[in-house]
Amino acid sequence: MNPDFLLGLVGSVITLVVLFEMLRRHQLREKYAIFWVVVALAAIVVAIFPRALFWAAQVTGVEVPTNLLFFVASFVLLVVSVQHSYELGRMEERTRTLAEELALLRMETQDLREAARERDA
Amino acid sequence: MVIPAWNEVCTVAEVVCEVRERCPGVDVLVVDDGSWDDTVRAAGSAGALVCRLPFNLGVGGAMRTGYRYALRQGYDVVVQVDADGQHDPAYLEKLVAGLVDADIVIGARFAGEGAYPARGPRRWAMVILAKVPSRLAGQRLTDVTSGFRAANLRAITVFATHYPTEYLGDTVESLIIALRNGCRVTQVPVAMRPRAAGRASQSPFRSSVYLLRALIALGLGLVRRWPHIPELPPREGC
Image (cartoon, each protein chain N blue to C red):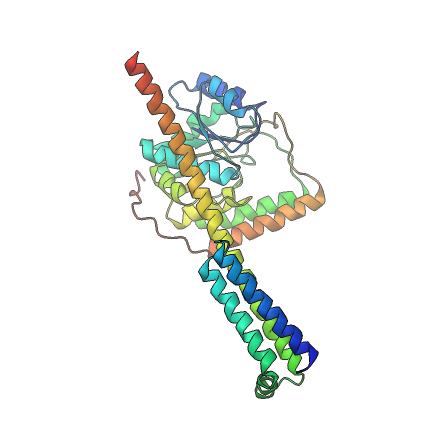
């Protein structure tokens, strides 16, 4: 096994350990963890069986196998970033709606409180 | 009457007082968009209802809150006025009168009344912004970025559901949404007063950025899909 692949193996194992620890401490939700676990496992497979990468490069017609690795890796990161932007936008829309509803409710409770005070007086 | 206000402590009380003086029968709601100055107290002591957003959402957020309030409280007309004092409440009646044959009436400068200086890219942006909505509305609209508008129940229902918060989305895009939901839009010429405080961006670079953002807001308004609004009241008058 050459050192590059050993590096990949160590990195993937560390990733898995960190993910496990974060899940254990409730710092990461399963739906996000699953994706990264799959990525880490794929990296481990490539590290242990480098032939899989060479084979994939041959099949796709990529001359330098590491280029295929870089391409796939950056594409995966791009997809994840876009997905996160989407989630962020959805969260913003939801917090906005909540803030608006909160403001209206705050005004309503104040009105009710004042009305109750007048009635009592 | 809904007034979106963000850190407008110097002008908001004056605007509220002026409206209450001129139109005594009108309920005034100031939506405070997370100001950190004394806007809330100033507006409240001037006699307005004040709705406080917990943090800054942008004009769109403040306006949607206002329209939601109006819809739930059963108002049939909402007039939107800026808190910086550039809109003259003297035109209020004229705006509301325009609602007899439209769902939204815009108080527009460049419509023959008043003088408001605008040149270069900012002016071009305004021309382009005028052409497309005019076409959709089947009406000449010269000032779609105006924050001085009257809306009837149909328009209130649309705006209570969809009111973008992006810069320019709150004026241009919201209007396109209303048009695409079958609202009729007209305008009434008004003279705008120079801003009592604050200033509009006028440097060529900022004007160009403004032009670009205007085009983006316009384009998105035209191509976006908006979820259907279930209980849209039927058209009134004609």
